[in-house]
Image (tube, rainbow, N blue to C red):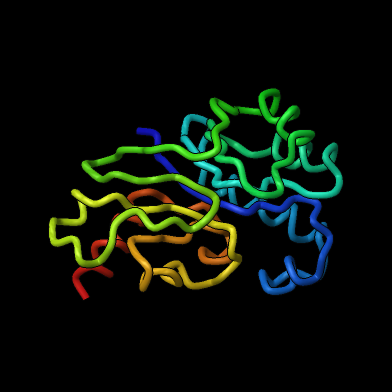
Length: 183
């Protein structure tokens, strides 16, 4: 059975120390190769990966090269670095099924709002079970804490920084969320 993964902020070719050093890399080349390797260790060709924005920066040709090495089918949710020029490349990249600015996604009875930016969707005063809330899956902030914005609402960070440079399985996201709600 195929799996569903979520990730954000690949930032292929973004040759800035503030990006790759906190992720544990000495340079952008090591970063990009490791991101591809980590992805392909987890993801199979028939899996679905939801990419919550910021695929590449600077060198579009090399960014496309790295993205085309990634296994799986992809839904792209656009981020702040996904410019109009880059968006022209995206439909022709390997496994891209759709490209949107934001979207709703239902899985296993859970409702997810997919966006690049953290978004308040349900407040903590809402008393119904987690499966009746709308949970924001996001990236953008490059923080290691997947619950960094939890004090604002049901927001779960999916950027590589929060998941040891790997995409995260949606089942693991649900487990994390249920554990957090039941603390």
